[in-house]
Length: 288
Image (cartoon, rainbow, N blue to C red; front, side, top):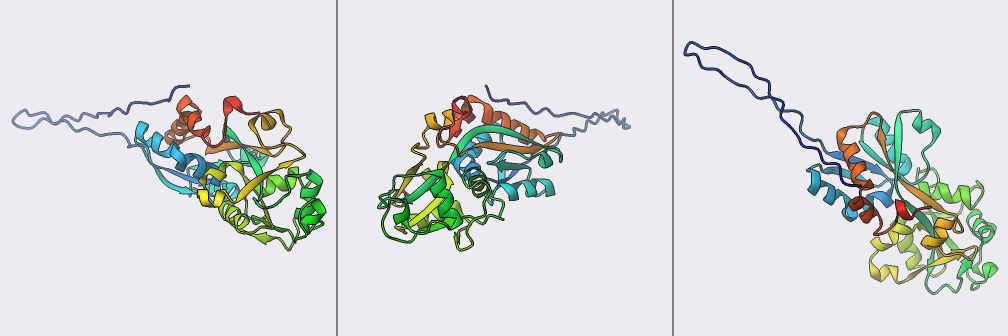
């Protein structure tokens, strides 16, 4: 789909004033200039798409800038949109009926998946859904119980009450809604979770896979992704549904939309925008 670029025209209001010399004066009144976009929400979209080239490419095409890119999480992004602090939100979970009822519209621009990260020295290569549930509910506390070394498991999570989509999605799909263990270390930023796992041989965390390329290579080489139920998070396994913790990447706007947000969403659905999504995520044509 091509990018939707509209030309800006000046509406000219002509006011005539006849002066003694017969001179006619013209006054031109321009329309409102394009405004900036304020984004709030998913770090995957903010860091992995907007700051990875989409914001710059869109500005180059249209002159419309992103005044701010806040990556405090999907839930906080929705709240910022509803309170007028943002004009565009990023969501990495399905939009709720309650959110739709408040005149919010979500448009899917691609797909991401949650990766299960451990230290590269960890011999464990696969974890079942039951084992993952046991680790994050506190029932399993030693790597020996899942085929690893005799060492305590140092699991980290984002704050379950912080509105981050990843921690909510994992709890719903993998844990069946069971509560997280109270003793788990809470780390707000997904990137900081990955850094913690990279320096902690007994660590484990569940983070959006598309964020991994944002890590410094010296950190990334200390991590590995383990399989879940014998399936790796490959595009084929995600598309087929064999790897079950995938999530849509959604841009959320108010209805009716401003021109700026409408144009950006159209850009992200274009071939150029989808190519940017495809750098770290699954674009629409390859999604489930």
